[in-house]
Amino acid sequence: MIKFTIKFIIILIIILIGFGVCLFFPLLKNSIRKKSISLWSKSLLKVLSVNVHANFNFSNDEKFFFVCNHISWIDILVINSLHPSVFIAKNSVRKWPIIGLMSKLAGTIFLSRTSKRSLQDSFVKIKKSIEYSSILVFPESYASIGRSVSRFHSNFFQVPIDLKIAVTPLSIQYLKNNKFTDAPAYVGRDNLIYSLYKVIKEDGFDVYVQFSKKLLPHEMNRKQLAAKAEELIKSHLNQG
Image (cartoon, rainbow, N blue to C red):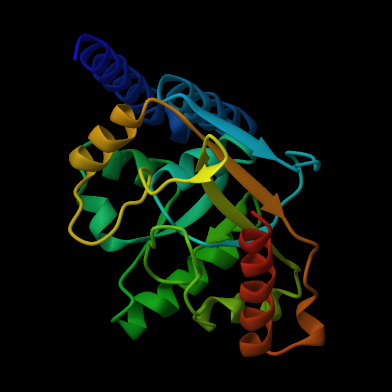
């Protein structure tokens, strides 16, 4: 219990430090913001004893349109530790204490999937954001425990087609002692505090991130592009 309490306090301190830094984001260069996000994410992952393994081999100056399976809020820390990106998140994330405002300051694009207006606004914001940052979309629409991948919705795949940029699928898989673990999963009626409790209690695990080859949008329509990205990500999870 003492170890748990110490970790929880350290995490709160790191979050508060990150919040303070985020307040100055409008005054900072984009490169400094990215470095700050990456360092902050790595710090939290270290305290949580999450070990990241990735076949990541491209420059931080490159910009990508990532699509990924979704399991946990930890997914965002993992990707940002490797390549800080602008995320598309549910409107409910905006209401999270402190984290919601931090996400907004970091450039997160919030979306209500039941609103056509919100979807159209998101398209416009993504097209502006890709000029200075990579984008990451979770096409499943909701998180799963990580054993499988749900059908990818194709709406957001229209953006790379319009902009004539490649799609880079990536998969995330959480393992402990080389076996599947659902401890990181943020699903159903879980709340953030309970999810954090589960992760700290697990006392460490590994996360494997597999980046796929780029998919060229001019060769497919948005539904074909979504299906191919889903297929590639599923194949990575099956290999695990």
